[in-house]
Image (cartoon, rainbow over all chains, first blue to last red):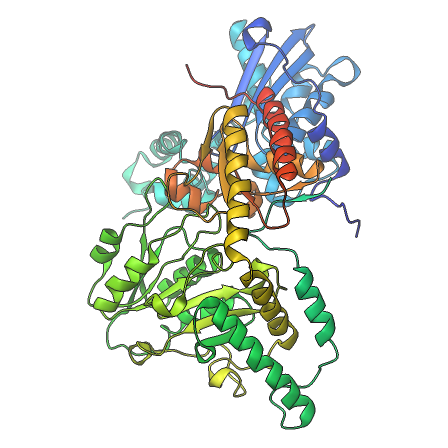
Amino acid sequence: MDKNQWAYSENVKKHFMNPQNILQIEEDKYPADGKGMVGSPACGDMMMVLIKVANNRISDFKWKTFGCASAIASTSALSELVLKDGGMTLEEAYKVTPEDIIRELGGLPSNKIHCSVLGDKALREAIDDYYNKNNQKNPSQESVSRVVCDCKNVTEEDIRMEVLEGVTDFEKMKEVTGASTVCGKCEQDVRDTMKKFVEQYYKDDIYNPGE
Amino acid sequence: MSLYLDNNATTSLHPAVKEAIIEFLDSYGNPGSMHEAGRRVKDRLDSAREEIASFLGTTPTKIMFTSCASESNNTILKSLLLHDFGFKPHMITSAIEHPSIITTARYLEKNGVDVTYLPVTKDGIIEISALEKAITDRTVLVSIMHANNEIGTVQPIEEAAKLLTQKNIFFHSDMVQAPGKIIFNLDSMDIDAASFSAHKMHAPKGIGALYFKNSKAENFPFTPLIHGGHQENGLRAGTENTIGIIAWAAACRAIKADVQNEIDYIKNLRDSFENIIKESISDIVINGESAPRKPCTSNVSFKYVEGESILLRLDMEGIAVSTGSACSTGSLDPSHVIMALHNDPETAHGSIRFSFSRENSMEDVQATAAALKKTIDFLRSISPLTPKG
């Protein structure tokens, strides 16, 4: 074994030591077309993504990240991926997955994936923000489920599926999805999302799985 | 540059220890054998036990060798499991113990033991009044650590020992972080059992000890963790780690000569380090700063940045430290110790432990403080979190 071997790939190390496309000026001096902010300090990872849009393509991508080496490296790698070859179209960018980022990085230790790869979510939030600001509907929005719990990467769709499986109790939802088990900031959101689906699916007593 | 500031994790071998190991390498006899090769090693073992016991302020019959302090801790705690008390036994420990106590206590909870985890103050100290309040008529064991491994705060174990002697409750302390850093005398402390480890004091890994005083032993159901031969008076089977024991005795001998000077020297390094970074880096919290602390330990939370990133960037500069960030623990939970102090994940995620030793110099301190400032400035420049207001 190499005596200097890192827990991370060379690519992670490169992006971590020399991150690309960092926002180097005050945020209010950078006229962004869309902004996304995900994670929380309590989870240990938080990132901000600012994008500029030209001709339906992402023409610039700046970011700031609080987090571990893989969180910093993954945002840096994402910024390069998105800006490659004149920039991704908004549709392409909206469909970037954590796997795409991990591939760019040459792999990540498995315990790092769900907590530190948040860049794709921040990017989607920035794109949504761009459409909102321009009073347009995001044509890609329907295809991707909103993340409710950032720490454990639990989406609305995950919660909907569990509700359909019969989970109607918040503690049980925490247990099966892991949602709201880390920093706890999403508790109200998880409760509300669950309630929404419970009301939708179990409004009639005969469907109630019972006490 | 190669700067090792992780001496609470483990220490380098003292030169005198290396010599002692080399000198002993050909003494392969089993101390349990009756022949001459065995007897010769038995003699060496006896005098090594004497030296180690004397360093800890006790006598050789109260020192049982184990493989590590985790084993010592497990031995005491798991003794509660197989005994029929005739009631549900209760133990008290603290929220900031080493994982070898906390995890074992949780295991006991799953197996019929009630456990109380005493909270600590913002400075990382348990309160004797809380301990007293937690005692029930079912309390059969209290285990409170001496110096904390992460932040170095020293728990009031002598006061606890006095209280527990009055109440006739068995008292164990995980004292791994103390030898060579805090001067104490075991036999005058009213402690019934204590755990130690050689590798925290410039001796090798793989050798630990359990101090076990017999006074309250009759009301404590001691059970060996490892059954087998008659080694260690039948309390811990397995052929002795002879080289480890000889090496540990050599470390005791080498450190004993000058222990107070060494403590003063290390404390000066630590205090200078903290004074420099308090001047040069804003928005930091020195965890446990106003409590009595082990002189080698400085645990600092840096706001707006995350610990693993700090650790890895310092590592690139050749500086070895540790962090209480979740990223280093392999789980999503940050340090239970920093959480017990502040109940704030952000403070825990950004915490770094610097632990000094006799091997470090004032130049090391200055180089570390400089590299640290550079690292924190950089990570804050790419962090979306900023000072409020």
